[in-house]
Length: 211
Image (cartoon, rainbow, N blue to C red; front, side, top):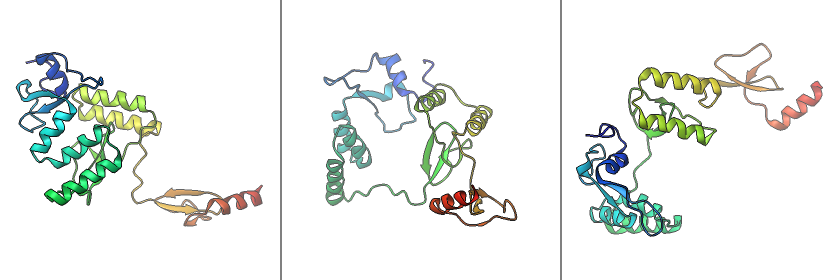
């Protein structure tokens, strides 16, 4: 057993036990497919390297239409071609795209996902905004290569809140205006404030009057 066998990094598991991942004639790396269909079973005997075309055909034969749609788009097909495939699958096989109804955004400070219920104990409602793609990749690499404890996740969350990349929860806050500026707060900020929002044009006129 290698150091990656207990992680979700199945590509590393494949490399350690089966050698380098092959590359097709276009320079694209092969996909790593879970033979039994269980993405949590990352044992090296359950992993096989397939070109994207082979991967698509395998899922098509298994009638895994959701995977087919994703792989078809990854093959460089246009949105129109992907949409036409979805319509064909719908008419011939009765496939329906997975419903997003009832799903909400969840974040763990490192990544975002959509789900009806919380994906785990370290996730909370909301969406972490990553302004810097490099920082996002660094955070994602931490999540992939190390088992994050609750304390580490909370520390990252607090750092995200402090640098503004993870905005605080706005639930329950209302918009308030004093005719010159707008803000959001749970309660009225002062005597001159009222519920509502002053538009930009009205704000500029009010600011001119004050100046």
